[in-house]
Every structure is written in structure tokens, then in C-alpha cells.
Image (tube, rainbow, N blue to C red; front, top):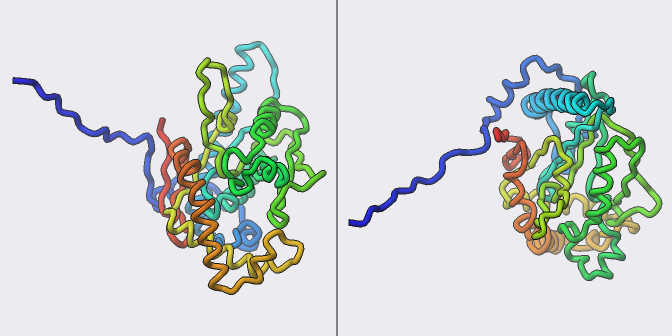
Length: 320
């Protein structure tokens, strides 16, 4: 009689999962350093940040990150002693990934505000990878304007060099500036990063690995420079609704300016504007989410899962 080997599915998860209440307890005695008037400039276009969100989610996270920064600095000091060198402290880099309209920018801004209030690392900078998009003229020349935001639309070499210089402790590193109003890189403008204690890097595809070379030569990933990574997660159908809501709100505000790149959408009827927003979501943003962004979720150290009101309902922290 032939012996049959029974196989059971793997039950192990690389993450520890927390309900909102369980995560909130991990704040312990971390002081609240923001007041209600601080929240308005930190909120998004359609996401109104609340004090409870900061207290329950972001204060515990800032406490965890403070511990990570301290441990990273100690590890760097140990390595320097081993090498017989007296290297200066290197910046701690945090990556923040997720879909268009999921609230990455809000998360990044809140963390910047909270982490800068810790006494051991007062200098916190924030950049978005939008600044490393290729200019529209080049995207048009390559025939990939409709793929803007996809991995191939970024100047990856420049982004990797930027992160390499920051991590190497270069005194002054510059990044391009992107304008959402003009939907393009702003010529002649730069963001200057001068040896921060912490750098937060926010972008769509920052957790995506490169294709491994067959010859085994090293190719750095953007995420290789991260000391900690966060993925903002939500159901795609919910994100679509947020995207459409944001589009409609911008249509009644920023898009009304004749100088705005998307001014033509301000003239649409409400029904036509909603239909256009859904079309853009399905043909561009949802496609990018499915192909390039969502598959990187499991590479994050921390996953913040949102409900349909932008309220973070659960947290997953990678254990390995």
C-alpha cells in the first residue's frame, strides 16, 4: 500500500497583530506633545485627524520608533568601535508606503511632528518620492505619461544616490521639488536635507524590491536604506471612494485656478467628474496598487489597517 504524506498548511504569521485597544495600551507614559490646534495642518484633504487617533495610534508608534532609533544608534556605535573609527551618527530612515489617497502623507506628517518632540532626535525631515518622478516632458518622450506613479516613471538612480548620501552622513543633500498643482517637477527648486536625526521617506513604491540580477551583482533597493518601514492599508474599494471624494473636493478648490494642471476638470458636471475620477482610479491608480504597491505590504515592519472612516482599526508589527 502506498504511503500518503499528510501536509498541513503553515499557520505561522511573521506579524504580531493588535487591536486598536491593545495597541493604545503600549503608549504607557509617553506624553502627548500635540494640542488640538496642531492637528489641522497635519490633516489631509479628506482626512480630519483626531486627538484620539494621535493618542491611540501615533503616540505608541512614536514610542516604539524612539526605542528603535536609540538601538540603531547604539548598534552603529558598536560597529564603529569594532572598526576603530569615530563615525558620526547616521540618520535613521523611516519608509512610509501605500496607495494613492490612503493617507500616507498624513501619517508621515504626524510622525514628523511627534518624533521631533523627543529630546534625543529633535531634527526630523520629511521627503516624498514624488520629487523623483521624471519630468512630464520626459514621460511624454518615453510614451509613459499614462504610467505616472508606476515604478518606471521615477528617476530611481537619483533617488538611490540621494538616500545613499543621506545614509553616508553627507552634510548637505538635495532633492527635487514636485508640485501637485502643476503636476510636474518644479525647475530650479530643491529640498535640502542637512544631516537629520531622522528622515521620513513617503511614497507609493518605496518597499518594492528590484529585479535580482543573474550574475549576483549588488543592486540596492530603496528599502535597503530604511531602518523601519510602515505600510498604510485599507480595502481597495474604500480607497477608491476616498480617491473619488478627494478628486471632487479638489475640483471645487485647487482645480478652479486656471493655472492648475487639472483645471479642465473644474468645468465638468458633478456626474461627469465622478465618472472621470472612477476611470482614472481603475485605469491608473488601482492598476498600480494591484501590480506594484499591494504586493509589497508584507515587506513592511508595521502595517496600519484603516477602516472606512480613515480610523486605524488594527496594527500588525513584524516579529521577524
